[in-house]
Length: 218
Image (cartoon, rainbow, N blue to C red; front, side):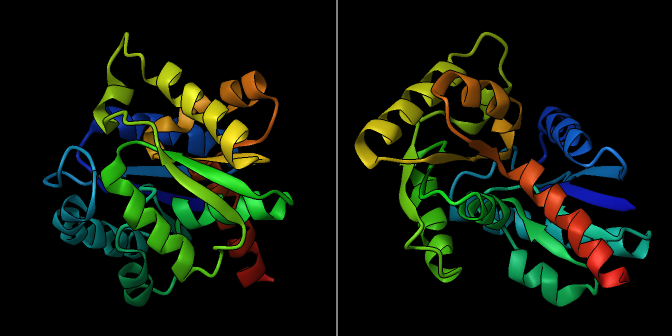
């Protein structure tokens, strides 16, 4: 099985992190990780998403043409998800939608902890559009810029952890969905620290992609 995991931004180090999370989540699959060269270095709000869209859609079409069984859009805003699904005949999964559903299937009401406040309206609108508003308690910003997640020595993990603690105390969250693909390497550790499921959308999307490809083949 071949999964194309597409990073809609142009930061190669983030693509490498995403690829590692995808391979761990789908160890039997071939992971084809792609960076959208020419897109913004990070997707922080609707303007960046709009700028990345043509590069993302081109990669989705290329992935299908090269034999991918499914595509994962590795941006928590689910940038271009509807447009990508309309372009190709293979499953296309956004890590935001996958993370929301994973938390719901685990039986928890959850809060999302994302990067900057500019991303909150986009994510909240997606939750509502997917009909999952009754399950999502809050979308919270840690105020960590996306590229801080790539900087050695950054305090990003501590700031995200502090926001998770506030989500548990103030929202009553039973699970946390990490609201950025660049947080993919933090989920397991933060789950241990806080004693509740901390869900990485990359891993969730890859698991769902494997299941969908197998269902289509049944």
